[in-house]
Length: 139
Image 1 (cartoon, rainbow, N blue to C red):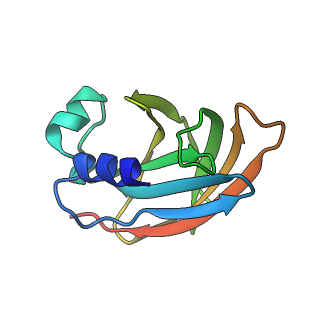
Image 2: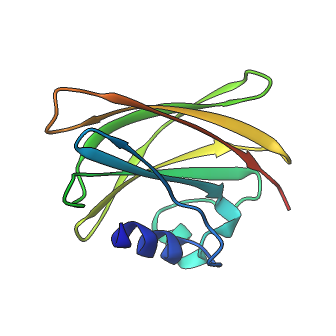
């Protein structure tokens, strides 16, 4: 958990963030969504992420019951309240012992996105679904 918090703090210009988590059997999934304009400029450049107020990102990481990062197949989509679907191309990022999956999507002011992910840890024959929603504001 500490590695996830440190990575999110490194990504953002402020300490205002919310990392959420859900447990699925032996695995815990941590997830976060935020406007890409909140990213630290150096981190955004290193990971080729546009710091655009109309672009947001979602981050997913999977850990085993000991808290170690686990490689996984992560696919998903974002759907707004009008039913418009944006498939998420999740990029794997490895930093030391941590593994993150990042996806970018478009937003508008006061936009609520519902996220649906299918996640399968590489060492597991079983997959699980992660679902959550979040509202975004454009400056």
